[in-house]
Structure formats: C-alpha cells, structure tokens
Length: 312
Image 1 (cartoon, rainbow, N blue to C red):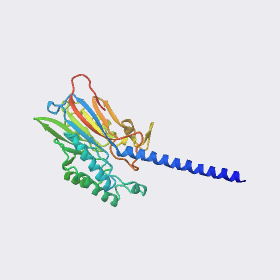
Image 2 (cartoon, one colour):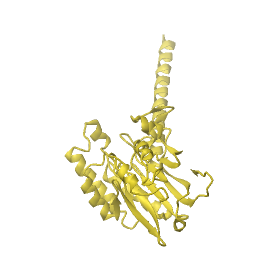
Image 3 (cartoon, rainbow, N blue to C red):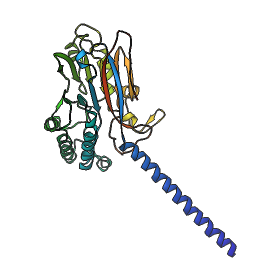
Image 4 (tube, rainbow, N blue to C red):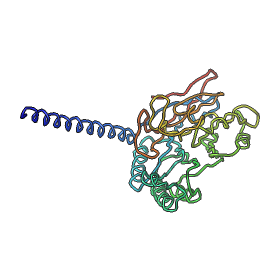
C-alpha cells in the first residue's frame, strides 16, 4: 500500500513539473512574439527610376507606416523610435497612416475610434507623437497619408502641423532641388484617381504613397495626362504583413488586394510597388512570421535598360 501511495505522489509531482514546463514554454513563446512586435527593422532599398531628375540622384525617403499608438507610453516609444531614426538623415519623411488605434481592452469591449473616449485618448496620443517630430531632419519635407481608420482628420492635421508634417490626402506637392522638380503624391483611402493622375505627364517623376495596397489597382489603371503610367513608385502599408502569419493564414482579415500585395516589393506596369509590414500591431502586440519595419529608400537614375528595386 505504501508503495502505491509513493508512486501516486511521484506521478503528481511529475504532473506539476510538466504543467510548469508547459507554462514556461508558453510564456517564452509569447515573450518571443511580443519581442518580434517591438524590434523595428530598417529595410534599405534602392529604386532605379528612369524619370528621376539629376538633382535628386541619391535622395533618400524614409517610409514609416502603421504606428497604431494605443497609449501615452506607446506615443512616447514611437517618438523615441523616430528620434533614433533621425540618424538616417533622410531627405523626405513619409508617414503611411494608422497613427492611433483602440487598445486591447477597448477592442475587447467593442470600443472603436468612433467612441468619444477612445477618440479623445487617440487625439492626445497623436499630438504627443507629432509634437516630437518638430526637430526631425528631413530637408525636403515631412508628409503623411490618411487611413480610413484615422478618426477626426481635421484634428489630426492640426497635430501634424505642430510637428511640421503636411497631410496629403488626394493631392500632390512639388519638391524642388537645384531648379528641378519631383512630384510627391498622397493617395487617399478612397475616391477616383483619374484627376490626380492626369495632373502629371508620363515624363514627370512621381513618388506616390498611400495607406493600403488596396489602392494599387486603381493607381495602376489611372493614366497620366499624355497616357500611360503616371507614378514611378507607390508606397503603402496597412497590411502589417498579416501580423501573425503561418503559410497563407493570417491573424488579420485582409481583402483580396491586401493579400495579393501583402508585403515586400513588386513591379507592375513599369511601376515599383512596396507594401511595408509597418511598425505597430492591431489588437494584440504580437507578431509571428512578420517583422516590424521601416524603409529607407535611395532614389537613383536608371539607364534605359530594365532595372529593379531591392534591399538588404
């Protein structure tokens, strides 16, 4: 009888050890997924553009998308990230939308950006973040796109202005260097693009950016004033790369176009396309099979042979 009792105690002890080991493995796994969401990688790429004016040879663009700030602590962390990225000394800073979002607790309680309390918190967080961009060095300017989820766009524009950032929502600006011009276009989350495309000619060098690659098909089918592609390169974020991705399965529900252009570089119809996996996360701050990233893109003049874009 004593032997049986001893064997039972041993089994219970082993049971607790196995359970503890499983809990530790789960904790380590979650810590790894959380760490993957917090470490931001700088992706370097060179885009070879036929229409690039000589004065812009070697100009650099820093593209940062999907901050998804959920709290004052997140806003300060994002500001700290931008302070570190200032060492890259880009000529242009582009921000790709989704500047603030509901926190996990808010989401679990069915609260979105239309909720007054969530919107007020987001407004405060956005102001804190953009205020920190006052001294960010970008001699050719700091510009931002608008995501469909970005609430209170007028308040957002005011917060951006404090940091010297200009919102381009379906409009273009001309960047000038040594008397030569490059067109920068912010594509809005909806609306027809034919007028925007027709405002430039095919020989103009146009760098466009938007929040989501869902806008790529409309941008690719619109034509310049003299026909043909109107943009040389289009940058987007929005997908988070699926955030947690195993094969074709993703944590985030993505539409057909977002899945098609889920992440990375492509070239279609002579236009370079980039979908960034972004910085932040939706819902839970965890990533699997994806990485938080920003992109430093160097513009180069291409010869008349087909060139490419790539990075390490």
